Image (cartoon, rainbow, N blue to C red; front, side):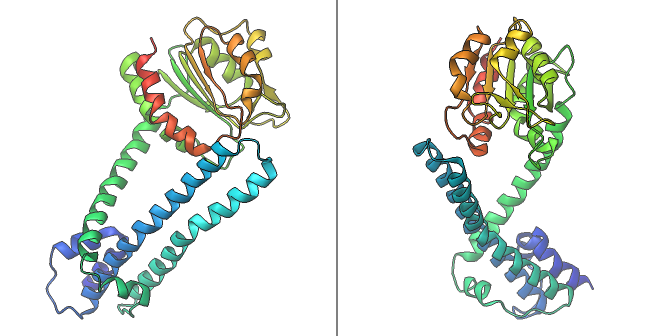
Length: 308
């Protein structure tokens, strides 16, 4: 039973540790072979992730260089690219599942694809190093998720930075809060507890954010009308520069607004004028979730540090 648990553990992320502990036994024992196969799966996971990142980068290149491509055509291309990018990971998942089933039965039948990796001289070193790096990364990600959701309070009168997200996407709130983490941490340090709000995109919440916030991020698709922001809960309604004038303009503390929606730049001048003196970023093209996530963790950090 102990060896069976160790064998299963090799596929639950602990193959590097089991290898480094140098379990006694012949190389052809069931446990040793499961440990080796666990390392081989770690090795296969690396190119699968690299391929996924590469294809996602190609999607950004496509969006940047063909801004006028029709949305239905673009959606089809992106769907195909997403399927292709996920195929290596899907194959890896099948191999992982087969290995788990074998370990639970206390047997191992070599999988030809993973067996070939064992013949590579550097595979074991790469697998152990990459495996430990990935484990550390997962621990850090869990910390960020927990910490980000601690900081993402419901906004109140003390809130300085807002991330308002459209809830039509099947993405839970904690994902948006996690993406907002570095800005939220900076805001917490600079302005204290309660300074971060992560809420759905409703007219009421946008009004509140523009009146009270220093930095506002509207994580939205483009609205029903060109240049507007789509709203949560009501796909037939929008938020536009006219709504900013409706509330009497932006608040005196507002310094930066990031509007992620596709083609919101169709009303770029109107947004800039209605939100004066804040700086406004809009997109006069198809925009991508990946580029917005990168902005939050790069330029967004600079903005959070620079605003007063």
